[in-house]
Length: 254
Image (cartoon, rainbow, N blue to C red):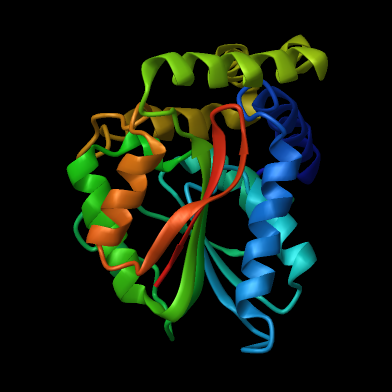
């Protein structure tokens, strides 16, 4: 299923543009995540071990390795097409693992040789139900060294419905000013992918994959809901360190 570099570059570049529709100040959010990981690992190790959950085509992994060139990054996803784009376009950024976060044995599939320094994720964990998310947070707490960090960038609404609506409006207006909605959307990107014969085999494999165990979308789980689950799972501290609209970067320290 190997891809040409030119094909991978084309589709990753289009992915980067369409994702700007969905993540308010996406580049700033990536930068904040890298800031946190760099801060937590500074002075402790020159070779931090980092897991990137729901890595897609390697967007965050590629940025992290530029900031921390000595890092060992394990990038995880269940989508064979996005993983192959990552392996081809960002081959040196990470070791890529095809597994389903939250399913039995998923942590063993990571083949880690030491405790983790950091776990990162962007716009990926919301597909898990609250119960499944709690279990995943427990798994991650067990994998991190004391003082290790989980950093999650995602859209997390306010508990109050009126404030949640205001925050969503703030983010939407910001995206409009940045002309983010001029880019193709998620559906259009995948429709275009389906027309590329070089991706046909990967797309067919993607269609055979079963739904994720424990789905129940936590997209509307609030920031306080996430921090509560994190503390219950064994993280001593958890809270937001960056926000724009309903887009947050949440940090939890083991």
